[in-house]
Length: 537
Image (cartoon, rainbow, N blue to C red; front, side):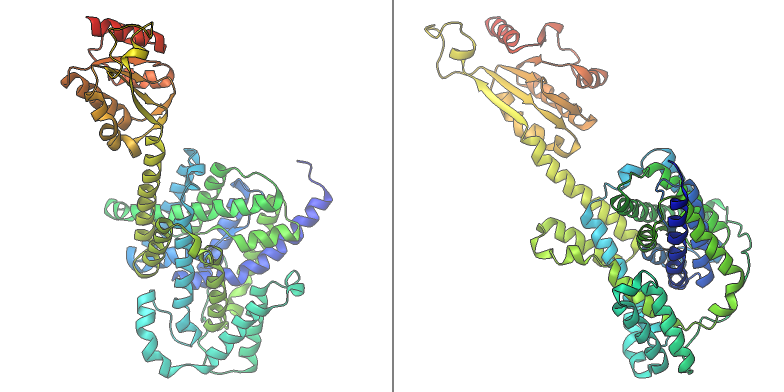
């Protein structure tokens, strides 16, 4: 790629505008994660810089996101007893992302069904909105949706109206900021400025962020005890999956805007390196940030320079920003977060909910409900399992439709002349079982039930593998069961058209043990001759 002055100008403007958007979001996501505002900035710098350098999406801006903030909040409240343990889980998730990329499984992560992603993202949006209601009203943030809802009736009688005013101004500014002004001043920064201005003009009792450290972060040593690392595997894996899905979906958005092509495996390696560094310096985990990426691309950013510049600007701000951040009211960040939560909810899917097939609607609603009211980890786990079951059910129907089981009438199959008087016009002593296409564990249980009876009805059965493309181990063992049924029923077996990888797989598993070599034929005419000799013999 030839890098010109025009490219540099676009990257400069894109990186600067992206940093303007990233600043208030990093502060807000840091607070929402439970690690604090500076953790959000450290995460934006670490993940933003290393994902830009080592990642596989040239114009992507990375940093704290809504899904990662909520996932981290769950880890802080439920899976870690100390800050060091929470940051160790962040490092572990980064290592897992690096392994995902090194093992080249990045493209498989995007195979997560849309109904699960939609339910998960909408659930995160609901969580952000509900959890931010309390700081929006001037009260300390609660640790979960249920605790927020339970505390709300009591706290409604003690609303801090200074905070409510500031939060409302921030929220309305973010919602109604004019489109012509959005390129020069993004809505999130406009909302932050408006809220701070109201707080200065209306000094009162709205809670503020308070003391914030300034300067470079100190190194945070991870907890390396075997007991904790074992316990931390599950939340680290979920954090890695959430971050990977979030990043790769943002990469697809970037591709659609730039008409480029991202490298999924390299992107995961870059994100993983960024999260490892972020955990080591006390930052929150991050991923590809859709808002920052879109702003960067629309501003002209087309290369890694824009992402590096965005992270560098945030680093410069961190070195002297603390004293100014301390006076920002929590209500300002709550107003910004409520708008972010609303945008995260998948309204495109929800507005079509009456058109969605019931099974996928149930899957989306189940994932959404588990995300909001139970646990992010459980929601993702159960959602993926349920999606796998739904997909297997669909594959079962498709694969069984490719099974052909039919009888060969003696008069047309076993005779060379239609006038042969010895042929019974109604007898069908030879049957055909054709397995066409691919067969997996999805259909293996039903295969025996589907054609087991047909095997018993004939004296000779021809198993036709001429059009079989793929068999997994489960389907191969079902073929073995069908051969056993034939043996038990004294039915002779002929194998036709066995070749290629299907043959290699079945022979490697010794599926046809004891079957004479003369039972393997290539064409139907050969099968006819072999069947004739078996019946006569």
